[in-house]
Length: 314
Image: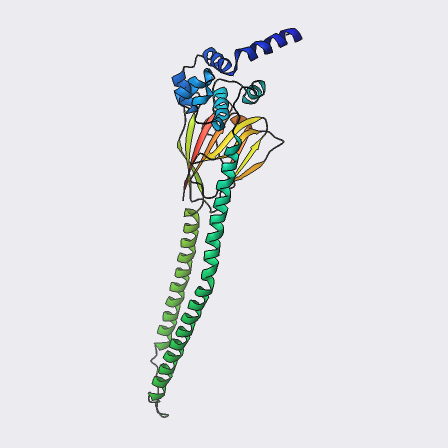
């Protein structure tokens, strides 16, 4: 294609508009709006609004860019290239949205600071209570010790001329008794060790596949059982991969393209009860959760676009 033809093509694409470009790609792939709604989880009326470039009826300008990227991935277009071509047409988030987010974050920090101050104010009271309990316990201990000493003094001593005669089998019986006590002690120790090992195995974190996705954009489900208090997700890509990572509340922890230069990326998901992955190039992406690599339920070379939900079972 000559430079002039490329110029004509770019001019045609720009004249067409982003909505018409997305619709054209969808129709070329023979995908209906109902099928697109099922794969992207975006309501059909929002998909229609994007094709008509009627961005006013979307939930907000902040979500317009996310919806367009999701639509582009579903119909096989490059979201980054599409956004660069139509950057003037895509609505930009309003500044007051960022201010609102900053206000919420600041309010949460102040709330946590108040809680910390309240906890620190209780520490002196706790120390006083512990001291009082310690003094009472010490008094009770010495009182019991004095009572035991008094009882020992009142017992009549054995007469000097008292003779103790051991039977012929007394030594053998005592040795057998000592042997039985040693056996029981060893058995108890081995049982305790076995129980500790069993508890350790039961408490080990484990990723279990619950459901394998299907369709053009499969969504699979995992359960993360017995997770640690600190939940870390490590992402590493060998090629350009578009990736979205969010929690159960829909809060995005990562929403961008991931390349080998940016890898690895570590995300702190502690306290979240769900981890959602929306992957555009699964064959190049490795996901590790608390040191355990997540194995794709479907072949990532044949299913490069995959969605995965991980339920955190605490």
